[in-house]
Every structure is written in structure tokens, then in C-alpha cells.
Image (cartoon, rainbow, N blue to C red; front, side, top):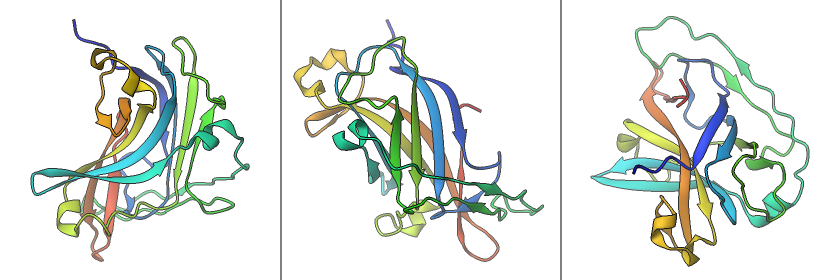
Length: 206
């Protein structure tokens, strides 16, 4: 019998107008409400950018939630987003204006409710907020390979899963942790008329 995905996304918002693009390194703000199909004892969220390089998948870690981030309140951060309607252009990578500001200009992961080391439980509703001040992958992934379809992944790990049997998790091993679920965003990268790398992040709920 096919196992259901552990993460059930209820609502999902991305700070871009549908079908619009932004510079590859521009800030990105994602917020989702979700529930889980089974208990995750020691949850940890990670943000990873994945690109295909010479028949191999390169994973670039962008952000990882530490135990302190889950257990301690974060400073209040004000984020404002301004989206301009892209002008008509023969290219699908038309220029749009996307701005996001934070008090400390730092990337963050914020989880509600604050877990305080508690497990994720079925039947509960949770919220995850991700703010990436920049998406810097050019230092790892050559531009040639960026000009393809990539993935931005919000991956959920159970840091106690190494003590479980393999059939209790549907994910992949990463050190002593096991990925138990993820929310994946297809990212299309191209160049605009000025030669700037532009990204288009696909909302998986649409």
C-alpha cells in the first residue's frame, strides 16, 4: 500500500505575483500552514537549493533551523513586499520589482507554535515562515547549470530517525538524521534582456 506524504500543506504563499520573475539573488519570503500524517519526534527544517550538474544533483544548503531557533522566540521582523506587474515582453523572464526588508537583513526560519523541543503531532496545525535575504548559489553552481530547472526544497528532518527502522521513514539519510518529508518549489532560471539572471519560483499548490 502506497504511503501518504508525511506533510500535508494547507496554505502556501510566496512573495511574488503569479508568473512574474525576480533577480536570482533577490530576497524570498515563503509562508505555509501544514499538518503531519504521523509524529516527528525531533523536527528540524532545512532550506536547500538543488541543481543538476553533469548528471549529478548538487545540493546547496541555504538555511538550517537549529534547536535554539525552534526553542527561543525570534526578534520581531517586519517584512514588506512590493510587486510590480511585469511589462509585456517576448521573454518569459520579464523584469519585475520585488523588495523585502528585515530589521537585521538576515535570513531566518520561524515556526509557530514555538516547539520548545516538542514533537510534531498529527491533528495539529503548524506554520512555517522562511525568509531568505539572498539566494547565493553562483559560488557553488556554475551559471551554465543554473540555466535549467532546479529545486528549492523545504526539507523536514527527524534528528532522532537514525534510531528508527528504515520502514518508519519515507525519506533519505543525511548523516545521523533522516529526511521525512519536503515541500518542493520548481525554480526556472533564465536571463532578461540586460543579461541578468532571473528566477521564477513555481508555487506547488497552483
